[in-house]
Length: 412
Image 1 (spheres, rainbow, N blue to C red):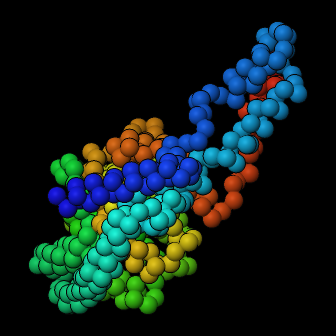
Image 2 (cartoon, rainbow, N blue to C red):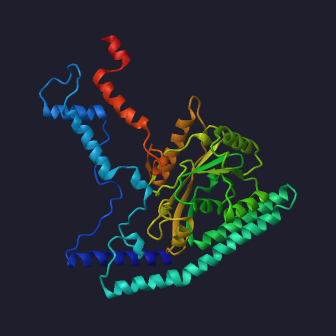
Image 3 (cartoon, rainbow, N blue to C red):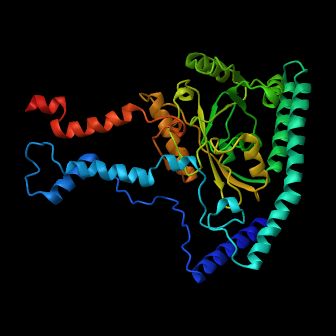
């Protein structure tokens, strides 16, 4: 009921902004959820042939050769990428079509009417004066209990009682942390929940993905050892449960990482491993390339799709813009974190399928279930440059169209 009332208030505020802008002849910023440019899924060869056909009467079936008009294809593609590329916009928060009474989520916010301003001010008072202090208190309580209780459980000898208590402690503490975010989570198809000895893979939007999943089941976490408060939490957690933490020098050793993961999944008494193969946070509109490492082990993979509703609070962490503390405060000062989690049927590598193909198949299943765009691009482009191999691939496609393949030349 509360969410419904909030949604209706947001809708009214949006309509009021649109009406006020129309009265003052202001042009509103309209977000494009899909794309600015409609792109047809055609190949390089088909598009260049179409350009040649429209500008020349020459027989297209004759011997292929370079034409000046071919430049138009590459120029158009370049301009399209500058205006609306499908990669970099995945690394910034999605702009909403309706205003959710948070100034940071709408570029059109300005004074429209007294009623609208009063409504926004009332929301500000509720979020920062009541919800934020309560949520911060719950967060400190959850983290404090996690450190204290896991340290106590770690003193017990290994056995069924220790595993039982560890599971209950982790679930209780994560659920307190979920309450600190006012997270409203809907879990679907729980019969497909990850089982011991498997690997759970999910799309990655935010650090709170871990809390969202761990509040419904226990997992073995994988990550780099940190210092400070995070290091204290990691050391206490590993006392109660066999999580997999790596030293900074070990992270780049792929063989060592694979060996540690493989040893873990071979022990069917250990919890399933939770991994986010994208390796970086994406804004929950798409799924980007999965790193193949976790798919080379040969264990059963349990795909999970996570979809957030940004109307009540944007869960995406733009790490290049906000630090962790700033991000968490933004989450706790939002209305709520609303999301759906789908547990997909377990998947295994098929005969003749390599790790990359398996990873792409799992990624496609997650994207399909979560209503996300399935992209082949590497999320590492968030901070790195485009590899030369991508440029060379386009050059090879064009040269293949001009001179043909080795087999074509041998036939001629």
